[in-house]
Image 1 (spheres, helix red, strand yellow):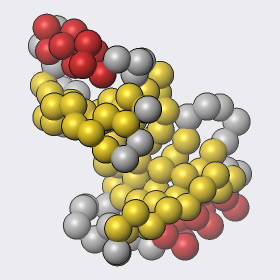
Image 2 (cartoon, one colour; image 1 turned 90 degrees about the horizontal axis):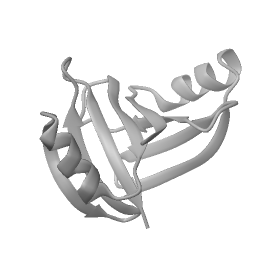
Image 3 (cartoon, helix red, strand yellow; image 1 turned 180 degrees about the vertical axis):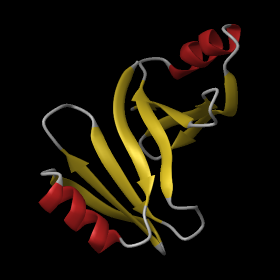
Length: 116
């Protein structure tokens, strides 16, 4: 598994972008509006992992999840289950591939993504 991003739900997208670009020195990689009322901004720094900012009033602000790329999501989920991981969403098709969620002992969501 490769850590790919940290997703943060934000209240004010412009203020958050300004902080991560002007204060933290990240650059905007891309911006998306996948659904009405949902805005996503991907920011990159010096490594491979990105910060994903999402403005969506349906979710509480703060850290939403840590995303990891996997080669074979079904095998990965099966292995994690055998080790006692709490799978909160079984592998589900999404536009860019397949997504599953699990929780760490602290309740932090971990998104597993197998891209097409």
